Length: 454
Image (cartoon, helix red, strand yellow):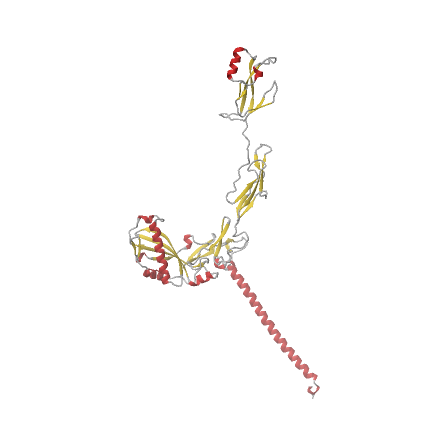
């Protein structure tokens, strides 16, 4: 660091000293290896204090000047070695507070980065709320009194998603019949309940309908491109078949609507599987008017008749050289089992029963049905209290509590009617009685009409 009185270390700074002390500082460096202590060694020239031309008084000299003078005269008394140490090495203190990561749900602004005394203020994006142990939206970078490390004086706030579907206790989708609220980070959206879909003529409405699975086989060699569902041939075939099924339904069921989706194309010649959601005219009208419509259909669909009519209406279809004519024995329709496919919203504590075109939910034994609407029974099933025995008044079919309310209202109405009849008859009797008394009093008041005694 210092050679021949000359500073070689760029970071070294010399301070005012005396003839007994030399004071300096320099930026620390790290030695190779794992050392906890270091020593600083110095070679010191000892000079005669009365020799004004001694090497000690001349200070920094180049190496050439030192060699020339050394050959002429000995300008110092001796060389001594001084060792300073041990100097204990410590890990460097943090120069800033830990970095802050608020993810994508909020933002913050700091007065001076993450350095000492910097203050950072936090704000959450719309649809999120802030939470922190200190209930504050700001933190300050402070120095720990014990270890000297820099740290934040409070916990970093967290931005949590607001569940708009439940926060107010009121369903924001309550005005759209047959819909339910789905929460997403920062917002929500209304979607059709399972068992309901939006008909093509009313895309903003949710209507009940019949869920049907279809299957058709074509006697054609299976092309390799159909293995890839995203290939040009796969996309073209799906579009052509979807349009064919939709056009057939439009011809044979002009008052109904349908949503058609090709679900699978597999090998075995060419086998196509598809789903159809069929809407009756009444269901579409109710959905468009936001009127509730039962999820269970009153008139089961005649799938056998519909299968025959669809097959008879099928026209040969040419898709990229493939001549698609369905085989009669492999042309079939079947009711879709929503209970097996998982396309139902029954409570985990309810049993799902498949119906033609839909499904029904019923709370399991030992659970009470707390569903909001009777037509959506079995959606919210809670454990029956231990002190409440099983009874017919609260059967887990979603109708028990509604039946109790209806019966109660009927009893009150009947009692009121009976009471009205009793009061009316009593009034009539009183009226007749008063009339008789009046007639009698009028007769005795006239002396000419008073009866003669014999």
